[in-house]
Image (cartoon, rainbow, N blue to C red; front, side, top):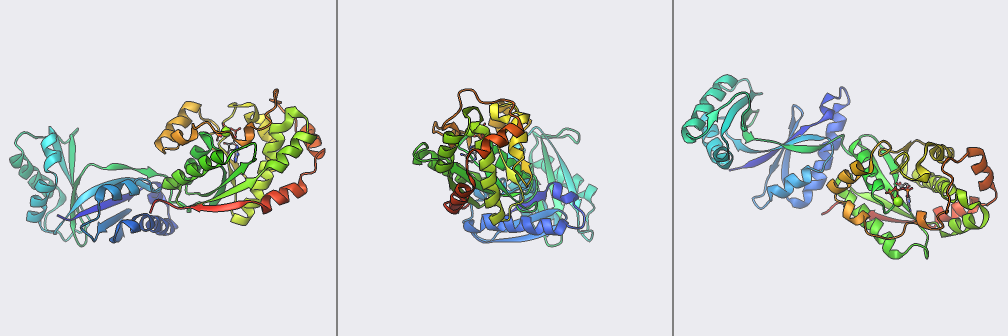
Length: 392
Ligand code: ATP
Ligand code: MG
């Protein structure tokens, strides 16, 4: 029996004229993720992509697992390919759906006939296949309103397909269809979630991480690299920029009032991130901030950080509770990495009494007492780049 995977578009199906460019991007993503698993053929019709494995050794579970992490897909069905002949459809349905039908108390059949030249109309297909199933599985009853199993018959141009049940896709829009942004990735719980959420909206992310050796360890950096690697599951290949931040933090400590350390540090991070974003042709920055979570995440603090930003700063976690963020972190499997206890450069020289409601003019004045311009340039020049690729 030959299996195929039917992938149905999500929100993309609603797009008008530029739908085909979304489809092209989605198709490219799927091919890229599946290529290491073997050879497949692909066709697209009516907001559905048909993925047919061309090698017997291909493990369908692995195919489905990968497709489930590709944005732009609403649902995924594993189906059995049949000849466009009702006898074949009947025989294959009984065999392919045997276990499913044996475990169910009730079922119904739904048929879709894209090829109108097929000799039976949809209601007739439903009726006939329904009675075949009833005969073969006498324990099961027909229930058209609330069945345990819905058997689908899909008659298309070259083949017919039979399947039951569907899996939820990752949703959102295909990666890259909304452009590029740069994610400020710390070792914490929130920023990987923020990256995932924006990737889900079709944004291709690169990451930037600030390190302050010897105050932060190699192990702390490694943890962030692990996060980045894990994020490729959903976010695709990712560039990882690692910025040396020690000189700046030491200058900050030397020249600026302690209560402003964090807020000025965050402004400097933004300035550097913008430089890297320019190189990357990324049009926005992304952070994992959530309003009120810590002293540097008050509205006033964000006013002060955003004052140095020329590009938009996306904060998709802004209105979320920690428990909601953790739920997503577990789903995308970053949580266990994030909770490893290594220091972040934000925890270096943390003020004992940070200003919770900083005033922009005072912050600007305080920042003028240090000379960061050359240091910012040196940090940008000293940035290391690494690429993390999706599992091959
Ligand atoms: P997270 O859980 O993402 O670490 P947090 O609640 O610990 O967030 P902060 O430490 O205030 O909050 O950091 C706020 C945001 O600033 C982070 O979500 C991240 O986007 C960015 N950030 C913090 N530290 C770094 C770093 N060392 N490198 C890159 N970005 C950072
Ligand atoms: Mg943090």
